[in-house]
Length: 119
Image 1 (tube, rainbow, N blue to C red):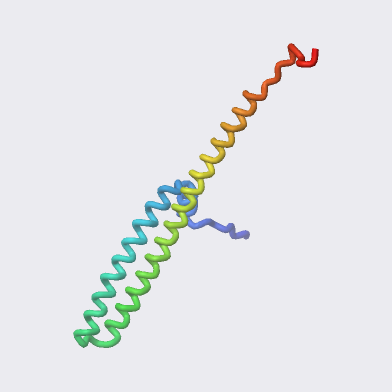
Image 2: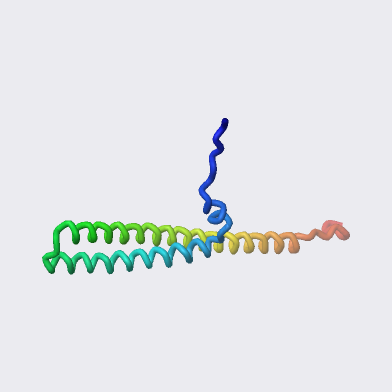
């Protein structure tokens, strides 16, 4: 019996999302994770300065650093999506300008063969 490779359940949904939606979700998610990680980090530092057990503030601080770094990664992905959106917009604009120039050249270079200049 053959086992088919199945795609993760959200992969199709992510493919269908627009760049704007991906950017918006990842930017908000990244900022939330960074803020959450920073608040946990302040709590861990407070525990350290109040002489709480080592393991407690160490694990909480490690967890907060994981959250902060994860938030930075997600926010970095949001920046990549934003750059792709801007590049797409610039490419469309350049193609429209090129199309206009080609149409102008075609309309200007119409040749009139009814009279010759050397007759």
